[in-house]
Length: 311
Image (cartoon, rainbow, N blue to C red):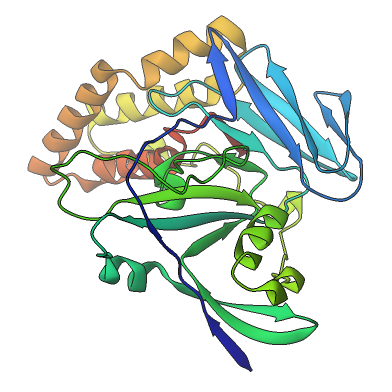
């Protein structure tokens, strides 16, 4: 097995630009649907067909929060569109193509974050000119249907999106003590072209792509909890209502969805949950605290995303 060790250090002074693949207004979200493939594709959103030319993308407006459906290539999935408190951008990848979050290291003093580079470099099994190779890169490969710009999902929030150019120079404060890192999200063809700037042979580079079927993708659902097992009366009533609110939320649309969602994630609900949790622990009643942890674990991954898959 042949091996390539690849790293890139950009020597620079610095400025930073924003990158967004969507926008949010009121109860609607505009999402980019990307087709990086060499062929035209047809995608249906809530039964409305969209034709996306090869190596192109279209914007789609979700007019309301709540449940929607995506259909592509004979597969369908249900998903929820909702607001978040922070990031509100990302895009839809119906073909489940590979995208690459690349970590670019900049330096003004000839220094590098060597430990960071070593930690973030991964080995990938690829082919070059049809032959197997191992290649080491500071990159994360993702092929989710819904790619969300949120550090909790991928460990980083990219600085530059798929339609932004990775700058050769950025700007930082003079007081910055360490060399900065920026993250660029690439389409596969663009990433290979970027790598091939240093080695023409890399133009034939091929990464593996084995996405799951839509039906096998992780679904976020309301957890099944036996309310009768909760010993504490106050805790039992809270968990019962909290589960009912989540189940009801997935049936609502528009303003009704927004109102209930705001209530569920409100500071008042959080405080009540926290107080009941602490009370149960002090009373050595772990049935209620266990139920609250289970609900929190089920929904924490979707707190800061706009789109997530459900049943």
